[in-house]
Length: 256
Image (cartoon, rainbow, N blue to C red):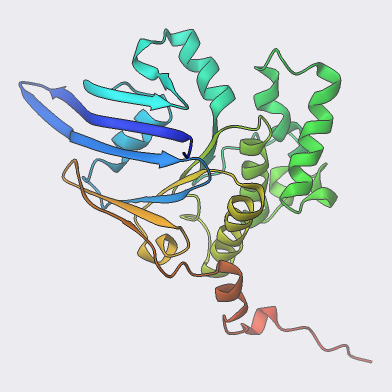
């Protein structure tokens, strides 16, 4: 039987806005098994952002149950929640969230500073391995402004991997990238999912990104309206290879 990484049952989230009550989530239920690559889709106002905040243990549901790797999140104190986030979830954001004056290696080391189980001497080694896993072994000492958008997102993915979390939670992780770079990032995530067995939950509003995941959960008006397996998962690597070559990408001819 597959290990459930996420087990969400009848989640509701309400907010008070003046005299009105906004019901952002209206009884959401679904599970995610270890090794799945799930896309959570939804347009603005669907409850997607609220769902993301709850999944990331940044917010608590008003009602319902959320188990993360078997742990009932609602029973935890603020400190216990922070520890759970650090150990169990690797975050990847749309805007990378890298420290500007800190090298790629030091950015990746950051989550380990809050993990007392990792001795100081192991931090650098773990961060180096994580950067190697995303193909940035030769960019370890570069600052973010010396890296392309795609490379910065790879650093962010390495940072998400470094604590060996049970789940990578990506929030619109291709939103700031052009088409070619988006496919490169999705190819990397597919590789991490298939070859390393990483569980990935990818929150997006882009249908052309959802086709690279194995399952799609669609939210609308605070409810799950669709939850289906993608029968024909597209290969991001193949899609990338099929893109027409732009003039800027063509090799430059040498002049005498």
